[in-house]
Image (cartoon, rainbow, N blue to C red; front, top):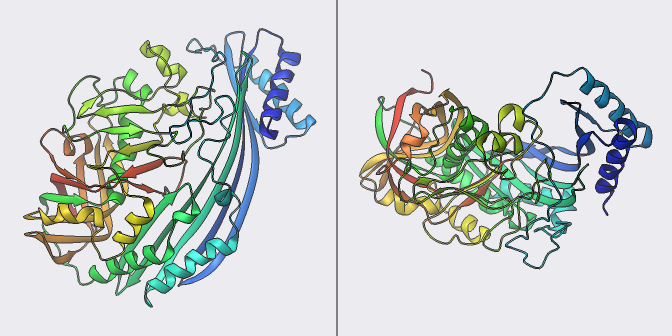
Length: 481
């Protein structure tokens, strides 16, 4: 038994002592150890590490629900957490939507590790070397990034994360798991132009700073002296970094079980809402032999599993926690979080299926370092008669959640393409676009052959994205207006 599971079990015992057997309770204990090596002006300027163990208790008593949390895990701290949560439940409003707690259920076996233990989940794609990575190992990758940029100004980070977590409830469910992740995100700058390179993996060994630095520098050099283009609808090739923003917004607002139940989502199950080439899967346990990027259970103790959100263009599922599932007359898909009852359950390990079987991460990164066009996007660019190659989207904001119309800006490189060749860099653009419409039937002209796992700047979501060739993208202005 891990230390985290021991704490979770003790909190359940205290709930029974204080509130009696009638109380229902769930406890999540999570130990997060994060280490970050940051660089700016082509020099490391910060190396920090933080490790915190947090305990979160959700309790339902006499028809009322309350939650509490603490980072004080000694006996007094845990007893105080239970006492104040019980007191909060007594003055909370009735909770008729309470779905109850999950009965004991075994964790699903990772596809990457079919022999791993079903109950504990401790062997789900865990890389010990990444969890125990040193500052020197991260600094090596930063050094390689800076050197490969060939004298251009660089900035960014290399980080490693280790998580060990456990869940217990009053119905007897008790599970534990751990995971590790590494990520690198850096830019190179020259003459006011920026280029970017990013990659995430469950193994620090997959991150090659030299490949990423060369890719960022090539993009920056190619993005100098941009021209301005008028507003209009443009054919586009979106590189994986840009596609990740599509996946994030689709997951947050579209495949959200609460939004679906409240009819605030575009999702219509069983309807062909996307191009037949589009398949979107949530893969919390990993796939294709790669280690799992997440824990094997959610914050309600529900075992996680692969969930196909879109199959061959047809919307097939949305993400549910126990509350939204009960309201929809179905079962939880394992997407509960600390905020899912408020903001809705969200798929957090989303992959848009590539056109072919992806190459290993190291091979993809090496090929991508050759120039301003990502290797996975090159065949798509070669087929474009006149359009835009877009590296990255940012500052995206939803204007209409139901149709998922989003406005935002491009950054880190846009190029005008004619007859399959880059003819000019383009200045930053503002766009206003319905994401489901952009991926609608007949609108996807091509999908890249590799899905690349990309780091997120905040939260715990991870998106694996290929390049996309789309028939139209609505440019509504330049970055300045």
